[in-house]
Amino acid sequence: LISAQQSGLYDPYIYLDIDGVNYFSRLLSLEHREEPYGESAVIILTNHDRYFDNVDLRGKAFEIGYGYNKATGNRYCGDDNGSEAPPLLFIKSQSQVSIRSRLVCILYCEGGWSKLGETNLGITSAPYFNEGFTANQTVYQLIEDTLAELVFTLNTLGTQDDLIINSFRPEFTINPLNYETAAGIIYRLIQMTKGYLRQVDLRAFEFIYPQSSDSVNETYYSHQEPYFKEYVEKSNLVVPNSVYVFCNKDPDTNTWNTANYPLITGTATDTDSS
Image (cartoon, rainbow, N blue to C red; front, side):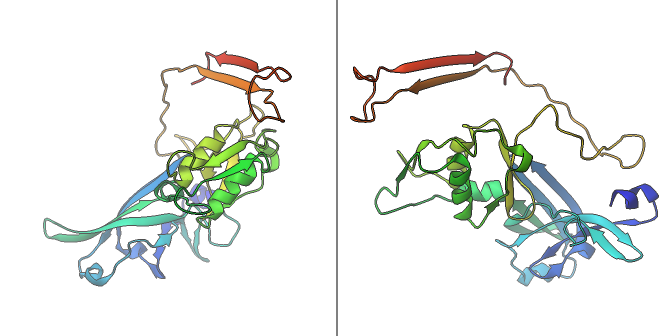
């Protein structure tokens, strides 16, 4: 796809297949955002023939494939020719709008993180639906099981292992006080690690552990192909990270700070973190 852009000989193409219909020919506007903990898109399609008056796309899952129209056919991300498919999107709402003699259909779409944030997990029996995991599963396994409840998957770690996510086995309870969403459970788990999660290929998530030795995957330029459209550098107010560690729980009584097992504590603060 990069070579196609550099050649300048091909027209852009967007694969927009929703429920078996490719809506690229109806596309008027597309705003698509991919961020570490959220994806969204607003798609405006022409409805001049009132086609969408009887078409309900709410709840449909689809992918947006960006590419080029080549002599050998349309090439786009996720076309089974070696390029990775983008994260799956879900249509949250659909609007028919009349704008100064023009009829359009607007699709408001959300990504996997929003789906996870809308779904409460009820485990075991009523009325509390809570379950405690007593150091029998790693953080990776707990996240993987949570994603599986909504038919998402977690990629293998590869070089992204922070030596915590696949070795630390926390005492962890789902729905300890109130009903939790799948996203809330994963947020609590990912805070135990040095990385973050992002949705990648369709329904897959991957764990990212940023390291100074990471190599550059692709480079985009402002003055030559492949171009980037916009660059933003944002600086946040620094908030120190503080870590408090308590250990040495009495295994016989399951209580803290006994005569044979005095409480051990430790604290650390990183003023450079945000």
